[in-house]
Image (tube, rainbow, N blue to C red; front, side, top):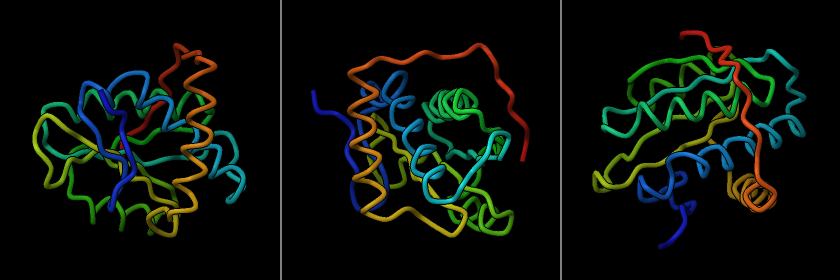
Length: 151
């Protein structure tokens, strides 16, 4: 098995290798990168959207749990096109994550991460991967709170 990888446009991988713990261990480092660079504080919102793939609602829910566990408020924007979420995030001044497989086969899916100013860059991806490796080997603790809102 191969693990999810950052490709041309976001993190991509087989649904079986992305859903669950892997989603959590990629989303939590995204929050850490935002905290370092954008001084996010508890209760700031992170928008979460998804495409219409069968696996997307589950993965979006897992993203929301990771965001809530990081002390932020996940905002469920539902199913919408990627550019619509990106524009909404920029207008609200909020970071965002969209669960989307775009053009890849149905047995795969992906995560695209956005700062309040637009899509993350390659340097952000490297930082997320470094933090993800630490979290994946150290384990994680998921809280029972949901704390989500709607877009």
